[in-house]
Length: 238
Image (cartoon, helix red, strand yellow):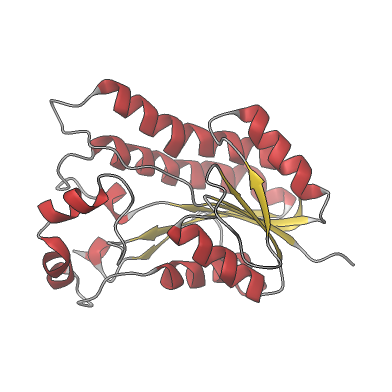
């Protein structure tokens, strides 16, 4: 029998690569989907994909299905742009919603025809979806809040067919997001400031997120669907 295929979008990024490694260690045949063709570890498959293009997503799913039954899909792609309330570049808002929300909706919608039950879809949200005090990032936060809504909607829609849909919401990462991540982190007090603000007094790394994803994709989570699992050192509890 062919090994279960796991697709990880944003698979060459920091979080995505950690998820790919963890799912590969679980014995899955991993497809790292991304626009950035960084070298992938031995045993993984890289497939170029523009997540904002439904045709490209369908081509990704078709190619992955040729490798075996798709049992796990993880949406780990995303971008961060500055969008200050009352003064945002509205093209940046549109771009964030396209990449971080609309493309995830496309992926969830198209996946139904390709997954083999029992299957798991895991979306990567953010603790900031639950917060109003993060300055200059309302587009990102709104997209992640919408993603959490998608989690619930698709969990209810796909549950009867044996497909579970959950989300993981990381907190402040040890490695800030590319682009404006470092300067936005500085506004939150820098590394020391965000560590001091976390109940566990630590940052989150890719392995923390990958472990949560692997659990949600496993048979141990067979009765769990429609949840958002915070992996945030306690920030969502504040």
